[in-house]
Image 1: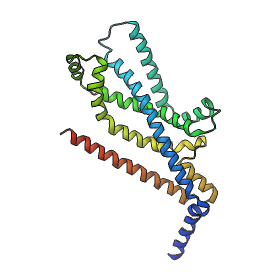
Image 2 (image 1 turned 120 degrees about the horizontal axis):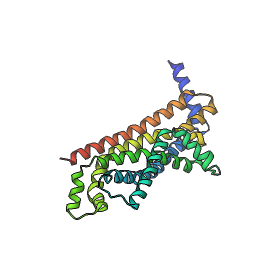
Image 3 (image 1 turned 60 degrees about the horizontal axis):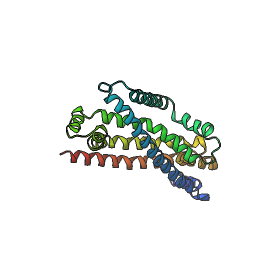
Image 4 (image 1 turned 180 degrees about the vertical axis):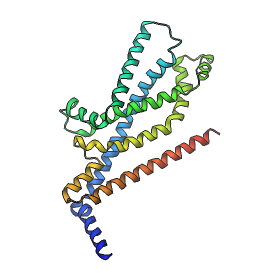
Length: 242
């Protein structure tokens, strides 16, 4: 047993203490959280726009009169459908590599390029979450808005959107957690995220077990923390319904 503890201690010192290799993990975790935060902001902004176009087109499909404006709106709705199909139908790692090696091939720092790629990818899923929330609101709410003298935009702003946010907020938080784990492929474009940090340590020490287990435990701890926050948020939202 003493020999085993001595071996574990030696491995720990080799992988994390010697040459301050633990700093790789700290830097990697910071980059992972930065990637996730920026990607979430980009994804939410894109998702709101796409969801607004898609849900408005669907909600007004039966009542809108044929017009030039309707055809233009239909064109943008078609673009949104293409965006959703392409983004959700291709692997995120391929999208990140296309952004870094093709679209932004001259970029020297892959962090923001990767964040943009992850944000565009996340936007497709956020859009469907928000669109589902809007479409789940009963049409009577729209009629109530019209009875109060609101136009469509005012009805969306004052009646529909507040209810939608309350309904989809837990799902958006879950998308944040999924996005956090998806950023583990950022190392493909030379971004030193948490996973890449563990791989760098492994390449320096030729010891795979301890750095990779450390990376897994850090991901687990962060995900458990945000899962706890989501659960707390859901309980608070349920309590506000009563």
